[in-house]
Length: 446
Image 1 (spheres, one colour):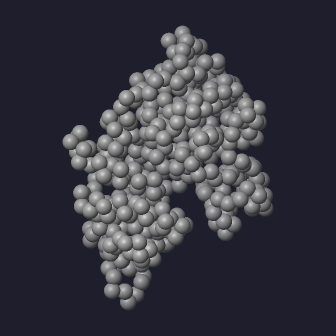
Image 2 (cartoon, rainbow, N blue to C red):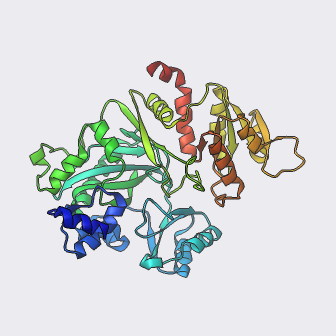
Image 3 (tube, rainbow, N blue to C red):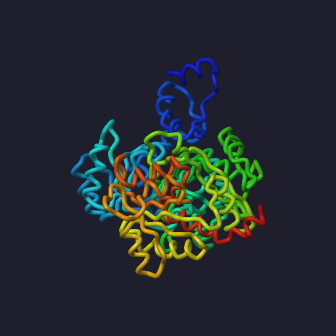
């Protein structure tokens, strides 16, 4: 109603929905029904990108790869498809906003728990079930005039698939994509932009696994990476896209190349969170977006750019600090090389009994802390270690401790209340270590 009031007063020639995030895209259909002209990509073509089955058709026609997925209309279908695809699977309602209610589930019990909170086909939206592919994730924002395509740059995510792109750190130019992979990304993006009859801007997210590019999704709109890419490439993307929408082709604007040459400098985008200000929002990162802003670090080397990005987000760690490790069993092997690197740069390691024993058996010195509610233990209680400032950073991968009275949630919340950074993705930890290991050089650069 309010949108229509604005239109009545302003009397525009049409409305651009591409720059208002998912909320604006969701308004497109209603605006069209009221006879309001949608400028740029048409409502029909927006729907072809957003609707699972229509999009699958385009992927098949173009012979592109994507994780295998199914659309389930009821509870039994969700369970059946997950079983057919094989766990882990990514589940989400269709037409989600900011990855809301999207989860990676590892077994049937977790899926049943998910379905209790997100029954299928509510409000006419089915549940999408996808194979969860683990690999390097990346994204591009492309501008199209309906015929020609411009890609200012390719971004690589630091966290692997499964963390929402808005919450992941990203680096431009990509550090681990081969020339062949980059060319695949260009070809795939160009084909999709033209097939979807994109006029204006669109965002493509993909996974690189085994040297092959898989499409995760296409958003027929600008994403939050547009300001970052605009700044680091010097292309005013919103302006160029708007000119395309108003009928000025890319060649007429002077753009004849698809992918622009990469910059010499390296730029890292890092998310900023407001967990200390938001009640009952869990800091565990997953497919649901939780960040409220972002910062950028730029330098001539990846490690220095990382260091500046972490500093910008407020993660400022001492040279000889201490790290608390609260790790799920499945992550123990993965945490070992990271714990060794922390130890090597002079960090004390704190962990609960199981993790402490695992690391001690492998030659590391670890201070054992008592779990929450552990009676008769001589060890320092874990929450006290956080509260009294013994810990400089907490690494917590207790991904199934989501209820507000669970140990994982309480540890994360206590750390945030006491201004102790919480990292829940081991890829982010790896990036943090890279920046700490090179701190002496980075400090000189600042």
